[in-house]
Length: 393
Image (cartoon, rainbow, N blue to C red):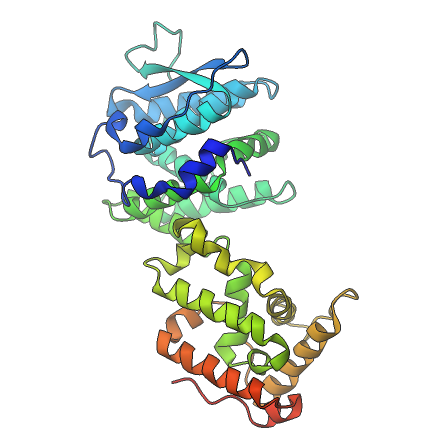
């Protein structure tokens, strides 16, 4: 992840930036974020062209021209790749221009703004004029997903194609006649993500995704699909515990040996429940609270939930064998869950994160108060199995 001192300062103090952005409601350069652009000085500064639109009707042309140039640019010309991607990203989210310029400036690039299409001839830029708006919208939505999600080298192409087909289908576009891969070279994708996939920028991208969900169709339809894909990003350990253990009132949560982790999980759960957008907590909440859902706060619970989750995803095996390096407490808690759940004839559901909708703040308090009382009485595993926790109303 790209983290520069000045960028981190802005990240930790982004309250000065408005909570919500509005699509094309004010001139790009008048956003408060424009005042925070940091310019580096020295001989290592490289000047790059950043394309900005001076005619909104030309947005699709500028976007496709930037992508065409990006795909044709050699991997060795990194600064040009960054600038072209930034130009394309601004076409998708115009209000983020100052934030995108900030990222470029902090990477040692001084931006020279080129207004398109009016200055295209002056700068010898040949515009791509033959691309349907819906196709451009799908590619733009893919770029937003690409920056938030983390596809690996092995699965990048399959994920990108899967996203593209779903996005296109959501607005009624056929998927067999066009190439829906915005950036063909995975090495370029990796390079771009190293610079642009940072917490600071992703926060604003997520806000714009939410804003676009409220626009008219087909944009609202498209970005509701995007919002569905990126929900619960960065919350893997937390959601696994919620789905696999909390949703079935697993006795694992009442075991004295992990009480300290359960307490941390309860704080995280309440913080997520109280947040305006629980499913985007990691991306939108302040860094001072997002640490609550990190895996290292409840590593044993997370590993137990992971093993059970892996088992329930396999129709052939009721439980997948744990790895040799798993600690004894993990293995014992997996077995505890297995005996208790099977004893109650309750099937462990495949993860759907229903717990965030099924349980209230008050119920969560009841569960963890009971947990503390059980731990203080030092109940044995056998007693816990025979006398499961009271049902949460």
